[in-house]
Length: 307
Image (cartoon, rainbow, N blue to C red; front, top):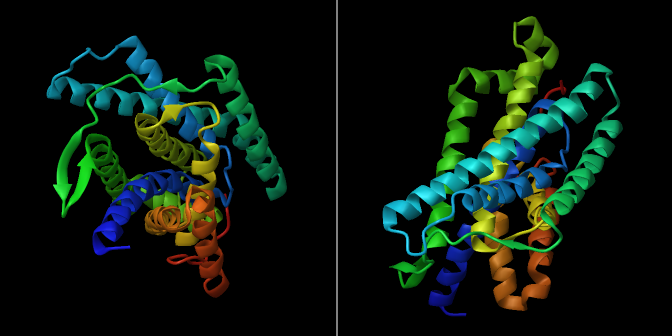
């Protein structure tokens, strides 16, 4: 493999890793406040793809849109995906997890509920939208935009990376610079002390789900712009993003970002070197190796009790 090939694969890995990182944030935020492995987050991601399809079907793009029109359609799709992702995540927390928290249900019950909610949501989507993949309405011509040190960058790749970086920076600022972020960190450290200090735990948990849902919804829309939207689209990206969150150190937002980018790059090199059949083998092998020597993940640290 030449240096040029390595650079090409690296760029593809960063694009893919940006998506994984945005999805992984949802897993790590919820785990941080509840110590819950929310497997239904993959369906929140899926709902974002359908949100984009619904919005762009209601407001169909022109046949030959101008640059400004294309920008508007992409923003519309992002907002619709984020909105539906946030609504699904909010409803999931209120309907499935809040009653369990009020009854002090065991952690195993939360886990089983998450798996059940995941099956329910993706079957519901299959019933509502059909079992066949839906194409995302064409918002722009996905042409070669420019070369980055000899590697062609398409419009879709640029959108994924730019939006992904903006989302990651925004979440990092929210978690580290805002009152909501202080509440999230307080609940993650010790919910009982946080409650005594005046933190409304129910409100923090609910808003954390919504924040993760917004991220997952945007990632679902971005994924749909590159491929198609279907009710099963959340499974493999969701599992990989969960692995990315664990690799980076689940409960750590920056760790989720690093884990997502790492797995994206490893996956791209694995496909290039050994073929698509080995796509997930290399990424999960790296996960196992890292956890053997650092069980808390790359940037992980011990977290406090859950809410």
